[in-house]
Picture 1 (cartoon, rainbow, N blue to C red):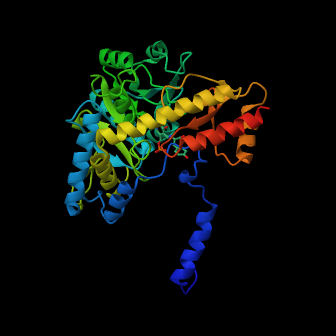
Picture 2: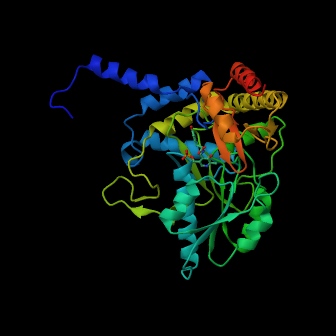
Picture 3: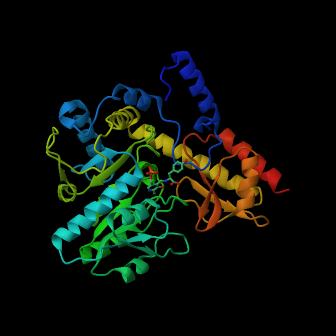
Length: 387
Ligand code: 0PR
């Protein structure tokens, strides 16, 4: 740092230079992101609560009341109003909290557990590997079936006296698949094992799509075995980054990981983060109130319509789908060139695509910033590549 500061004008001139190097969601060129342009109502609410710290909720009673209301609203969306949880930074923190709650609860019930294990689908997000590493858990990967959903038999075979949690995914990161959560819930109930559902991506769209006639397996708190759910407002919820949600069926799961906070306005804290922005809560609250079910139904329906358009265009251009899309994620490959080469050629044309690892494919996430005109331009480019 220099001794003397520079002028405000100069600071902002330099900031603009950095900004020029960033891509924007609005350009429609970002095809591999689960985030999107934040909704203006969420942005305004976010800005209003920038100084609010939910790490010391007694100072920010209004924000705390909003967080309680948001948790109830999210619970209501996911099958149970009477629910406990927090608005946090995103899916990673939510999944780590869920694994911590599961481990601690299992240890409270059975202090004899020496080498706790978690069973996650092979398709689970890498945040579970971080959780396993931090919490000293063995992580076992259950196999997938031919549709890339978790194979329930594979989970059953892996269960042991050390299993402290099973994870199912509602909207997998790479392919947007929804696991057969009902069967897994029954197995977990029978064996008294904690079940966490990672609906970071699907949580904000499956309930709305179901209301307009799409069919999905049950995945939420209506299933008695589901102990916690991750749902991310900063993905399909249109909230600004960082905004995640973690919901628990019972308060005892939050208590199992609470730590004494001697000099704060609350006695105990269960979140990983201490100082925690209230802005994310305000944005989530504002968007749920402003958009309502109707608004979110429109958003998820539009994404599915554009997904269909993209799906048809990809096939028409001579590429191969690796699987049928279940949500707004499309994965495809070429008969002639490798996935890496195809990604490189698309990148040269200005498209920021991402690659799935299992199976290897180009993966496009049709987030709300992807409009019909972007898909049409992308298909034109695909056609030009396949000549
Ligand atoms: N669970 C699921 C099912 C996810 O897909 C993700 C992230 C997480 C948990 C973790 O969420 P956070 O990243 O909020 O902690 N899925 C995307 C991914 O890893 C996140 C992402 C978003 C990646 C924008 C790239 C990007 O540009 O692919």
